[in-house]
Length: 376
Image (cartoon, rainbow, N blue to C red; front, side):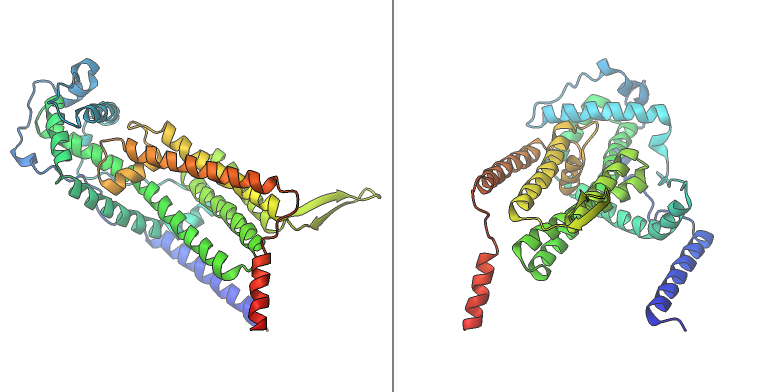
């Protein structure tokens, strides 16, 4: 007779495989809601054509975008947004001249190239579609709220002066906004993923791990393993070798921090491995290096992103405000300076710890509290 645990494992395996087979056999992936562009509020009263030249010709001519704008507090930002919109519109018209009048912008699903890829595809594509659809719904609500502001009113007025006030121009404006909203969905999901992981890490550091060194070591290990999982998901979505290598390196770092080992060569030539205990100073140095890499990554995103090719930080700020036209320069500058100040404070603290001659004992307060509790 099979024992209880193996029996449960067999049942779970059969259920998962049967579910995946039934999903693959009966279900065809599709979006839960039509990903259509909402027409502007003034679409019905606009003329069909305001210029003899078609919109594709108007936006493809760089010199024609002279941007004769009425003076306002946002005119300069609007001009930058319209240049990005011109590049986007030119590219879209080259791909499909009729894209403005498409009844539905269909979601594209990649064809799996391996048996494990097909397995994960059938397990995850359902929840993925549901979550992405809900996030997109929330972003569209933010966009509708932004449309009621004076900022959007000025954007629309300046836009019509630059591209012409007709139905085609209005559809281009709405399609550009919706395309950027879809680009922001992965950034929002990534932020939610990391928020959940950080909350779980804080809970485990406070409730599960007992000593200070154990809290630091296990938290670092969890951070690197979570990053490996995140990169693995990215690899499955984008088939990127670079991201796959990053996932492998992060996983190796995380497993090493969980069970640190050293290799030694014996006198007889045999190679042996043994577990070691990391002291507080090496752990603090590793923690500083890990957080520095995260800060460098965020700052690099902020520095390299643009309206034409927005980075995840910019896309998240776009989604939070509903404004996909103006680059959130102020918010990104505040975030960048905050990271810089925190990094300098951490650097000063690490230098102070590293220059101490004797090994610091962070566990002493906990042992003292334990002794006081026992005496009471």
